[in-house]
Image (tube, rainbow, N blue to C red):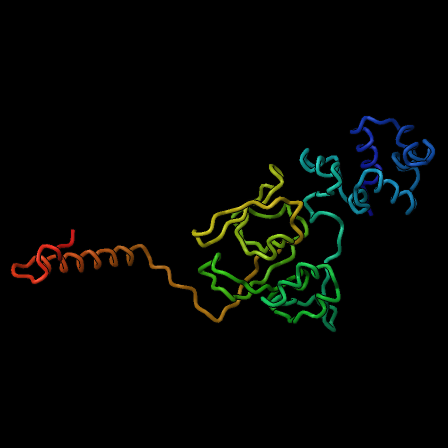
Length: 280
């Protein structure tokens, strides 16, 4: 299995302007040992991996599996601040999930009541195992899905109370602007929005509601815990119909005709309402 450990530790050392002697001294190892790691002559021990992770404040998973030198300057600065945000979901963590007797991923159901507990239990296998779970045969068995109950009217015409299913997104660079996602943060909880991906440029997601009464807002990538790509929704309610343009024009014309008739009635001689009844 290919790893980027050697090139990563060499790149990080040079980026900081340190010599092998200086880094080796900080890590409490001999310079030839460090040189061996950088040149792939020897493989690091678990203890060595822990030392490098602590020294650079970067997760072991990142040091091994991400080609750090190909990250953007913004992402590099985030790494150097100890945030370890490489647009793959932040710090290393394992998604808590459940499987059925056939070893297939379940779809867990997060209803309105369970949303409050999700803020603290989203990474707790015991909490996730207590959620209702089901299967949908038309969804891919190779992907992970979860269903959340929609609250509020910010995503009308999708009605409040609808069940929205999302596909778990590990690599956030795959977020496509203009598409719908379920975004989970500790501050805002679970929200279902249209996303504008500004992670690479500004380190944020800008989130929009389908309901124009709600203003868009921005979420820093460091606050995001999970992203689920919209797959489908289930609701017992029919969305409000959207009238075609021709129907809208007819409706406006009929209203105008009704208003004209009302004016003529009010303006007829002898109308008991007098001048106060005239509609301007």
